[in-house]
Length: 165
Image (tube, rainbow, N blue to C red):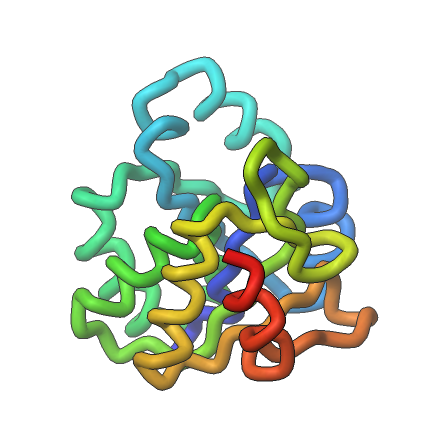
């Protein structure tokens, strides 16, 4: 399997992603699955231009992602699956693909109505519930900005987070 990392980061492609994540996981391809970005040619092209030349980026809507996900699982290219929201991860895991049951939550912005999960991850109620659903599906969910920082397993914070919604 050549999916190096399945990651949720609400900023998608940004400096931290480019400098650390791509390098740490030897990523050569990013499969960015986000309906809004896929439907906005300007934002889509900004993300495609933001990565080093040796990394390819495909930006697609969820409904168009199945064949690309299947290809990423089978090929030998280190691929980063990148999404903005854990709710999309639930839908991807429900596709029945042979994905490693592991999901990384990186930075998620402090927005109106969010609950603080870690110093870098704030979630809306729907995002918390989707994360809990992933946990119930047997997916190891962990929160970590970059590989050199310690990770926090969802199983260690879920009771506290769930009690705040």
